[in-house]
Image: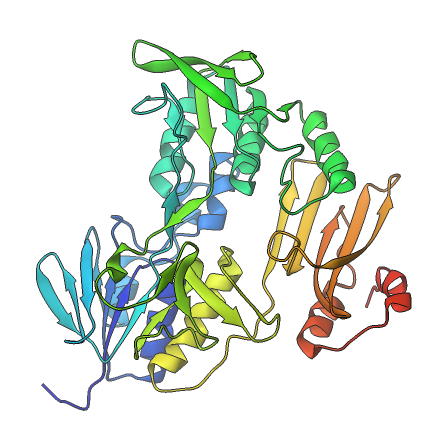
Length: 411
């Protein structure tokens, strides 16, 4: 073997891992790349799973890469493979008992859904998380057999479930312990707009209630009893309670982890030289926002993949994108988020405005007079977003008297 040929091992074939593999091949035609995935599928588009669940797009449109693409790019793809550990002192990754040497390794393992932890839920045939392609298939089949459904949790995952149930004609209940949907990122005024959009689609909203017990019959859940004593009968139940990060591969390797994921710097390198983390599992330091956080968006995963590939090759590229997220909120609303919000920092100052007639809401978040994030609700209310993102990147300070005028930026 030619000792000049660099060997790269990537654990996780999601968007971050596959993007990194593609970039490594692009910049180093001679290198060896091994890419591990524990699912049976090549890369698929996770942000296309909600429209697939709504039956707006076919499954074929969800798939991004096929086996032929990996062969063409000479990426050794190992699917259905459990990576057991990384032995950093020997510079090998161990999978299914076999050792794979590396010059640089990437961990892009993402996370897995937290369970409900509620009595009666475990093993129920009609209770589902919503994270993977297999979940989407299973929920879709259950919807076809159902008249009513319950989405559980206050997260974006739960919202997407409620939207899918409603769009496919089911009596839909959205159950959450918080005072409003998406309560970690939106305030009471924005929550009212979300409530109106959900109600317009016929969704029954249940705030301040949790599952007390799933009541079963013949192996399936027949109704849910809430902490408020309410009983909701349905045939399909699905939930979104956040993710537990897949950091077990780091055990015994010396790689530092946190409750948020794998600790890494602004180059996405861990504390162990030549081992990197990217995507959902990376608890990274952002040099623009000057904070450590974990970002579970599709765009962030792709941006990580590009940056980390250059650094695995010996570069010194800092992650410098501002995270962004946009989505429909039922048929009548939209949400756009960028930079930091109050879910990541509690000490932000806020400028906001609301137009009840247009159903528009806009909030800008400031830290030490710097613009660090924003949130927009409302169809047609995205004007100015690019200007805001550039202002965040510039780290310019804006005197407080200017903040209200900034809410009307349009260019």
